[in-house]
Image (cartoon, rainbow, N blue to C red; front, side):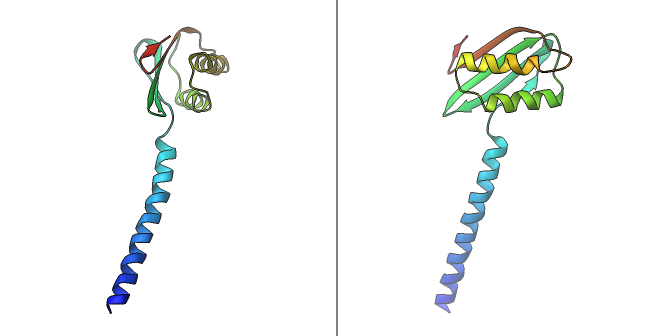
Length: 116
C-alpha cells in the first residue's frame, strides 16, 4: 500500500509540474512583449521589459489609434531590436502604413531611464 501511495504521489507531482510548465509557457507568451494603449491628447504609450530593462515609448500623433492599429504596433515592436533608432524606425514605418495616415509629431523612447 505504501508503494502505491508513493507512485501516486510522484505521478501527481509530475502531472502538476508538467501542467505548470505548459501553463507557464502560454502565460509568458500571452503577457510578454509590448503593451500599448491610447492616452490623452493623441499620445500612445507602450511599455515593455526586455532582459530586465524597462522600455517606455510615447508617440504623439494627430489622432488616437484603433484597437487593430494598437495590435499592429505592438506586434511590430515585439519584432524590433531594443535600441532607440530601431524602435523609432519601427514606429515610423508602422504609422505610415495606417489609413488614414497618422502624422507623428514626436517619438520619445526611454531605455533604462535614458530617454531620446
